[in-house]
Length: 54
Image (tube, rainbow, N blue to C red; front, side, top):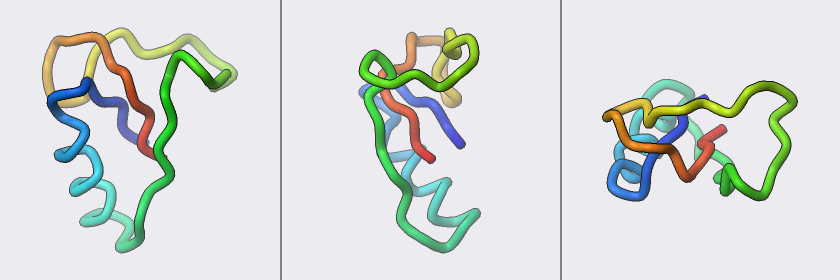
């Protein structure tokens, strides 16, 4: 699972595919309940994440 800002969504998708060898599901963080505290930073930088790549 990765969280990514708008700028790094492509990196998150590529990292997921490299790791799991399949396409991920994409979610907007503000539209889902992930059952825990939402991450505060993008996996690749210090920006606020927009997407969950799972």
